[in-house]
Image 1 (cartoon, rainbow, N blue to C red):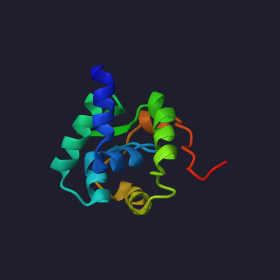
Image 2: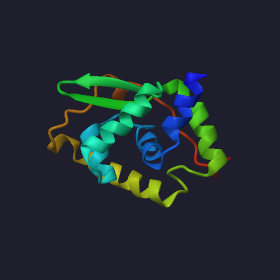
Image 3: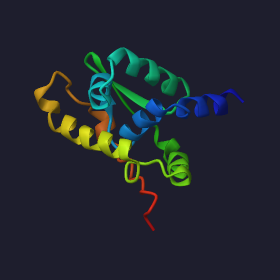
Image 4: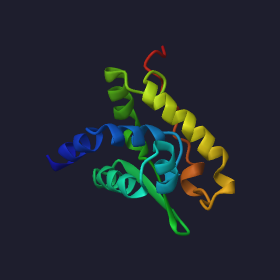
Length: 134
């Protein structure tokens, strides 16, 4: 029973849901997530710890950075939750803004100290369909 309560605890916070939406399609490090969400790195790290403890994330260490991405086995259930509640980056204004900020941040990745992931970047995740997709 611990697994299911950890799972829903991890998703039961707006910031953690926003983080999950950001790391659905690409691996991001703490500093990238913090910049996108305009939050302190320490707060983002605390949220990532909760999500990680629930087993929802894959991670990759690259030099001193750790990159996080949604574990592939959770994509179907996250899609179902998004569809049911209409809370995805195609329909929710906060998530749309986060997605736009993520695109801008990733465009600058090479200019920053973050080297980018190697293994997680090469693993295809498949596209999560927006709630209005048929």
